[in-house]
Image (cartoon, rainbow, N blue to C red):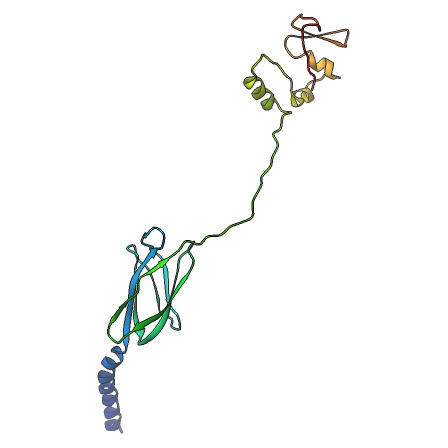
Length: 190
């Protein structure tokens, strides 16, 4: 019994030694370069898949890829990269013990979106807006903001207006700016 077991093991080892090189001859390699179709730039990190198998590779820093141990046959390879349209190349023939070269160029993916309109309004009632308006004004101006009025203890707009430098309120109804009568001054209350 031990003798027959030894013969069986020897037969298996012999069969594997004879069959293994024959099986190795039934495999091939697919290699190539992945480039940008518009610029010709080498694409590193592109995914290359051999459809119908579990074989695949990534392109290296030089844009080249190598898929080893592909069974003999005709295949379709799919190349994809983020931001690019995936490309499939069919009719890639793999022969036993040989290397098949297939260069692939891929195009950038073009996508359009709907128009986006952003609208906003500027807050003109705070102290910063008033100071900016005074700074950019072509004439001399002085102002008081809603924010500042809300912080003051004034009972009405006339009392708050007295806080603007150069403004005098006469009889609680007439505004004089720097001593000039209403005939020569133009006052706007917003």
